[in-house]
Length: 398
Image 1 (cartoon, rainbow, N blue to C red):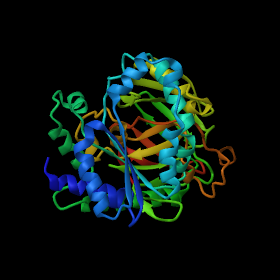
Image 2 (cartoon, helix red, strand yellow):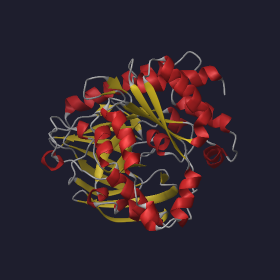
Image 3 (tube, rainbow, N blue to C red):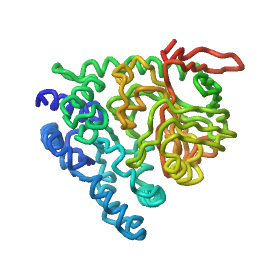
Image 4 (cartoon, rainbow, N blue to C red):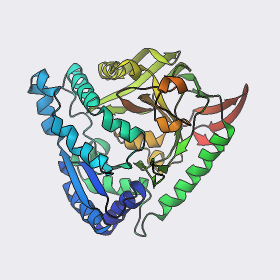
């Protein structure tokens, strides 16, 4: 892959993504398979004024061996240094970049209860760090980097060149830089402003095997693209990003919704699933693939069976137009409208003072997006009993 393009991508993540400031520390989470890009990325970070860059490496193959063979007390034990190391950087004002790939079915042979136990243990241990992220106390950005297994799953070949081309296309990065990304962010801002001005009471979804009503908290806020940290510094949490999103009223979701794309969760695929809600909670569900993993996800804690995010995404996005499933939530969620199990972003309500129940949003250890949008879905905003068409056949009408 052309180094100039990779450098432009690194600049977009650093300047638009986390908006790295002179003298600021930076945490980079990455797979060992991403080392070539990480080296370019760290070089650019220091050139842009980073004070110190901490790279936290991970390896899914090693994680698989531990999940399969280590005693349960080992896979559920989190060492203090694992928490204190990033925590010390974050308390010193560091930004965080997570470079993610996909290993699709690599953990398919790991018992779902062991994955569930390990995941829950990490979520509990890193609860305070997750809180900082959800509250935008530190700026953060998630962006994709190819690995051979991911390319093999998407294209049937382990050649990462094609995947790099698609990643850059979806991020709106080209030889000239990231100007197209900035223009796109302005369009998202316009739609976000419309939704915030309208202050809808609820949304209604209709489509294939979907008939769902989602009430919104009285003081809900729609967000999109660029957000501000608690000091008012702008940043872009996801590259790519196509969504305009908010938090639903925890107890106000009713009806049935069906997935439109596979969900990759903890190295497993959950596909062709549906969920039925009553008073905000999942009361019934099924899946053609990965039902037990879906069950573990929903049972993570009391809040995992409720929704924490509602996001609208136009199917004219470059991700949807590629007509591929990328088996990576960062991309697949930005291909279509989606919801998220679990924790809501407190930034999606005005004047949040720390009590989620008071403002009607959900809290949980987890936050997992799943896709529901397609070219046959319509979405309506409801205000004072009147419906306004927001999306028709998956395309914005505002």
